[in-house]
Image (cartoon, rainbow, N blue to C red; front, side, top):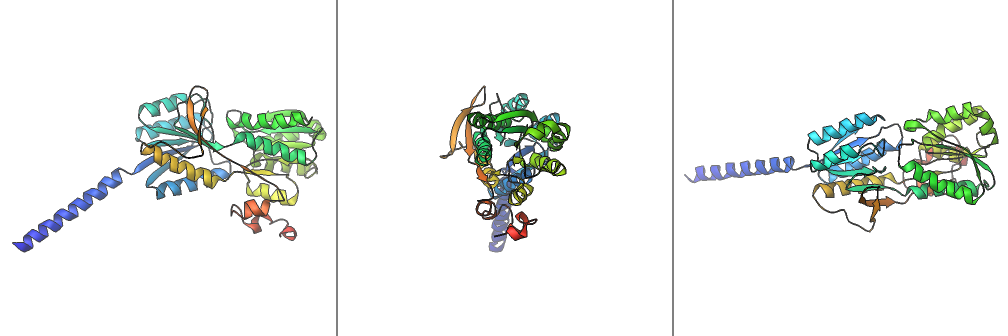
Length: 340
C-alpha cells in the first residue's frame, strides 16, 4: 500500500511539472518583426542582436522581410495580428502608410514599436531610433572641417518615404546655409536603391564637375557614388560623406576616398528595443532616463533617441575597431601599410 501511494505521489508530481512546463511555453512572449528589407548592410546586424536579446529575455521573434514592398509589409502585419503576437516591431518602408495597420493591431490588443523609423500619425507604443538631426549635423560639420565653406555640394538622399530622411537633410541644410555652401542639386533614391547614386553621377556630368562634395544618405549610396567617381578619376577629389559605418565606407575612409561616416551603435539600439518590447508585452511601462515623449503628428508617443558617433580617419581605430564593430584587418585590407 505504501509503495502504491509513493508511486501515485510521484506520478502526480511528474504530471504537475509537465503542466507547468506547458504553461510556461504557452505564455512565452511572441514578437513579430517586419523589416523594410535587408538591402542595407546594418539591418542584418540589428535583426541578429534583437532576436538574441529577446530570446534571453524569454521571447520568441518571428522575423519577416518585406523586400521594400509596402503592401507586403501590411500583409505581414495582418499575419502577425492573426497569429496573436504580443508585440509587433516595424522597420517601416513608408512612414505615412501604416496607420490602418497600426490601428488594427492596437484594436487586437497588440503593442507596436516603431524601430529606427517613425510611423507618423499612429498610436505606437514606442519609437526608438538615433538622433537624426545629429546625424545630419555631423555629416555637414565633417565637410565644413574639410574646407567646404563657400563651396558647392550635391545631396543624394535616401527614400523620400523614410521619415528620417527629411530630418537628416534639414539639419544638414542648416549647416550648409550658415557656411555659405551652395546646394547644386538635391535628389532622392527611391527605396534606398544604391544604384541611383551612380546613375545620378553618370547622368549629370556638368553638375558633378562643379561639385566640391556629395552628401550621400547612407554608406550604400556612397559606395555607388565613389565607384562612379572612380571611373571619372575624381574619387578622393570630391568630398563624400555617408552614415551607418558599413565596412566598405570604413575602408574608403582610411583609403582617403570618403571623409566620414556616422556610426550608430546598433547593438545598443537593438538590445534596448528588445528589452522595451518584452516590457510592453508584459504590460509594463517603458521607463529609463533615455525615455522622453515626442509628437508623431497625431499622437504624443514615448521616444528613445540614442546618440550617433561621427567617425573619420582620426578615431576609426578607437570607435570602430575598438568596439569590435569591424576587424582591423578588414578595415585596413586595401591599405595595410597604413595599419597602426
